[in-house]
Length: 640
Image (cartoon, rainbow, N blue to C red; front, side, top):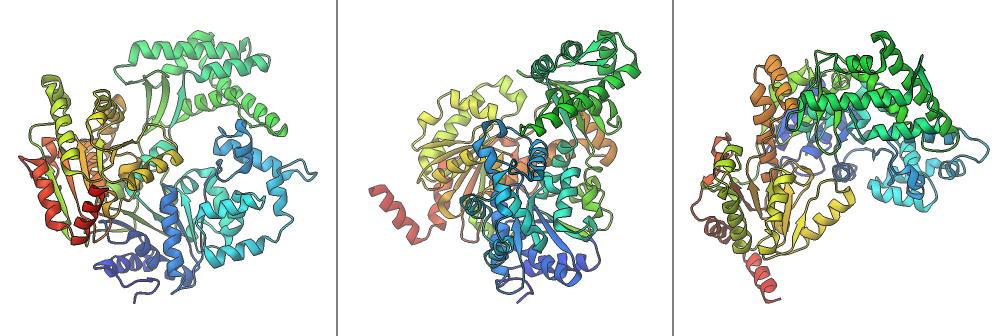
């Protein structure tokens, strides 16, 4: 038995644990592509927990979703039978963790920073005028709550529900448990965003140098880092600035310049950027464009523009402080504009690109192309473990994050490759030029989907390359031709709505799930056993051409000498592998992936087989791999 591992190791799992443990002993980072079934979560914990306890280190396990946090706690509960370990999951302020946000509709739209400001103010009140959920904590023995956590390590949802039932603040109670935890499961934000990281480490009572950071689904990290250091401002926000300025008496922000004048100058910036630089979906804006338009519209000098940006930010801060003292959400639209303008004018021209984005609500964006600065905590920690089933090319990942002392490797899935069949059709593609030349491609794809869903009759996911492509098929009445209930991943769904949809699909027989390759369903959810047996992947999910993508390609060509592969090809392959990976989550799962795009042969290692009769080949596969009990179940459902 391996120390810390509560189960007999799966094939190859001992090698994975030893690889991480050896890197830790030498204070090095581990970057690992590890296939489905290698037990990445428990393996990383089994390697890090014993080392951390021996050496006085703390473990931060970063996840993207609540379900991944739940998995961490599940594994820690099992591990507690063989090693003394305590873990807690913490989440940001939201309606789920803050009862006041549930009760007050005005607070529900609050950003984490706004809610943090308000909470800090309310907690400072000693006269009963603060937050009753926080005040109630003063009247209980918090150590008893922490002791309960130590004993049971409940899932976050169960703990939060218990706190709310007892009239306590779940967020503060989670914080109270953090100093006692060997492992803290947290969202990426808690380490990536500097001001949140500062508070988080204070709660943990340690420095970043005393932490071991585990990154789950690490293939998402570089883009997450870029987005975290990116700033975007939407044209419709100017209307809110205008209204706030009226309430505040339209203050001066420079001699002869009122806030309303800055709003009109910004509208002129948007208009000119749209006319001069917007092509299709976006366009590059020259470095000094915004400053020059503001100078011309406001009739001021360049130094005055800089002072205006500073004064608008300071005015916004004054408004926020006043609202905070009134127990209101400390939001200032004036301040948000000032903060954006300051960021836009000060961000590094070498690693940022400035854009105008189209659509119904145009935006200006200062986009961070280089995640190096944002990755600083991953370099400063004692060691980090980066894991994903789709991390290649690993050397470029290591270079992007600037990990100097690093070991990296790949571990294949231990599952029987015979349990997964990948087919493709030669007569279809979603390649843009082909769709223009041969519009019947869409009709042929639709016929393939109808034939497969109705002819195979198993729980099926149809992964589209984009929401727009999905809507195109829905508008052609595809769902009405399918013999089963259709469940759809909609753009902008809440987590609750998404999970309700997925859970209902899972419990169906012969249900159809419409989802997006690269979306939340294709990357973050498990569908074991008969929950999902057929995955139809429509097209290859290449990013749409855009000025942002082209700029990032040029930057990566300069950094890695592989702009196209890094920005376009590698993300497409990861999305394809992630979508197909939903089928096989255990050694007993079996399924078929059908790719409706002849370009799939260009993907190295995807091993798709050409089929001239997709329905026949799918059914032959299932007949071969099905157990007698599966036939009995199918017959019972058919009779029902």
